[in-house]
Length: 218
Image (tube, rainbow, N blue to C red; front, side):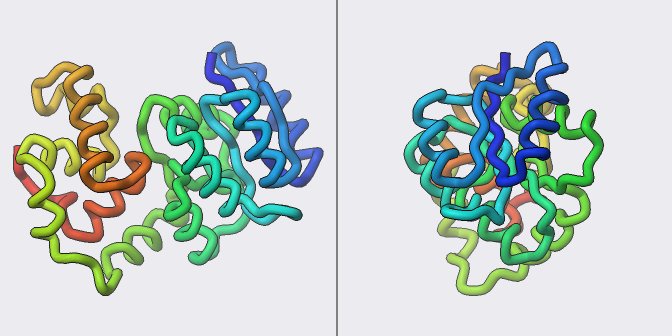
């Protein structure tokens, strides 16, 4: 079972999501929070696999909650689910450690798929904001030279990073590079450590920033 924590300041949203997600045979909502502070506390108490995190909430917003949870519990995946699609919220959520960014008008079946995929290691960003996100990171200034990034990774790790940045799962990477999934998981862990990032999404953003998502190193 995938254990879920829902954080949203609207009770009708929390209740609706809980009912809908609990219908899936492999999903279980184990706790709900009405603000970021509660999410931080409940995450430490219940140890969920994934948190659905709203952004604009009283007491503590979703950005700060994501930042604190990612620092304290790096294995907990945080999937932003919000009505806000402006650039400031989007970029800050990813920087804070969110593994994905979804808008609330998405289909329920797509949300369930995104939850399952995120837990398995795939990054999800709503198609309506993907282009802006990639444009922002591609045009970022004052980034270190690509050589400083590539120098930290082996050619095999660069190949794995390239596939991460283009949305491939561990299983897909293993198939393309003719590796076992266990080996791919080890490579991903090493890449995150070498790049000093907390998850695949941030690693992918670094790859895009430095133009490494189009490398043919494999």
